[in-house]
Every structure is written in structure tokens, then in C-alpha cells.
Length: 181
Ligand SMILES: [Cu+2]
Image (cartoon, rainbow, N blue to C red):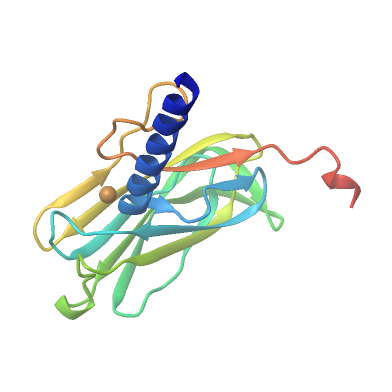
């Protein structure tokens, strides 16, 4: 009795978390290895309270190096760079400023993403060498209103109960044997 009840509530909780994961702005690949090159694909599952999506402003998380967005037909792209507190080396060059913000904007009304459809917005870059959670904050703008996906838990990675969680990337430590191959 006790077992079947707790099993049922676990199943329900899992089903609920899946439903939310599908509805929010999430990363299609929520786990990646530290120090690797990673393609972050943000899936936008709905508009703003029924209104079509016209823009996406993505905050590149600290430690994510050389962010490079994938262009989308019908959408314009803008990058914002900022000086780095900790410069790094890339292809023999010292990088002192890096991309901190990516902005996709629908170039016309026709290009806007209707609430009934979903789409994906991608960027790539190098992940930090340290394992741990990375949060990607996304401001979704629409013909009417906006969704600010920027909530981050104070401790841990559970976004349960949050209405507007940021997208979570779990950066994992490389496997101990990986360097031998
Ligand atoms: Cu949602």
C-alpha cells in the first residue's frame, strides 16, 4: 500500500516535470562534459500567453567561451561583447573580451514564431573546465508581452515550483579514463 502510493506519486511528479520541461525554454541536450565544445540548442515551446515570439535574448553564462550563434532564416542576429575578468588563450591568441549576449529578432511579422509551433535557437562554444551547473537566462519577447526565463535556485539545481526557470546545463567532469584514448 505504502509502496504503491509512493510509486504513484513519483510517477506523477516525473510526468509533471516532463510536461514543464516541454513547455519552457530548455536545452535539448541538458548535459555535457567540462572543457568540451558544445552546441547549445534552446527549444522554445510556446509564445507569451498565446502571443507569437518575436525575439530571444540569451545571456551567455560566465565561463562559456567564444559563443557563436547559428543564424536563422528570417531572423537577424546581434552580439554583445564584454571585457573578461579572466582572459583566456584560444588558437594562440589572448582573448580579453568575449560574447556575453546573443539576440535573435524576427525580421518581419511573418518570421515570428506562432504560439502553436515550436522552434530551436542554437549557439556553440567551449564549456568551462570546471564541472557544475550552468544557467542560461533567456528573455523571450513576443508581439504582446514577454517571458523572462531567469529564475535560478539559490542552492542546487531543482527548478520545482519556479514559474520562469532559466535553462539548465549540467556540466559534468570528464571520465577519468578519457585522456587515455
Ligand atoms: Cu512553459
